[in-house]
Length: 169
Figure 1 (cartoon, rainbow, N blue to C red):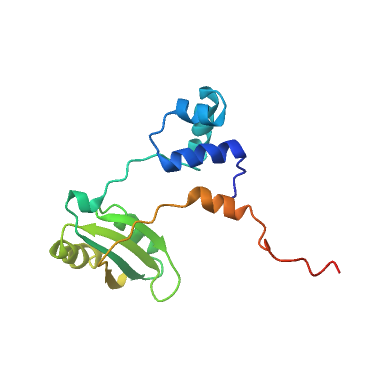
Figure 2: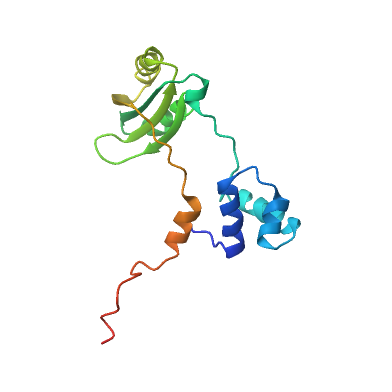
């Protein structure tokens, strides 16, 4: 369900996206509103699961050098149980149901190649319902910041922006 966001919400989200630690008073001053307005809006956006402000840890900075994407094929009827187990693994950063030859994609961070091998052969393969695991070892990671506000603003634009209207002639 699409949530209606107004310009004030988007302004607040833009500030938090740039720096999740920015004070409500700084945001309020920049947007020309009361601090209580910003506080109430952030509380509402958080309650509606539009935004969450969290600390992201750089896995490489704390010694986790083996990043990989696991492409799993899960037996029909076992999907929910496998996902429930996998998302509890501390190495798992992301999981998504997919289409195609693999129906679950999982991003993991491990200390090294041996840790990754132990995760795959010792825990993932041992889960009931896991039929196959392909591994894409990540040689280099590129930082891509979430484009939440830009995505919201893009979604509000008409799809035919920039085209001339040829149907009204």
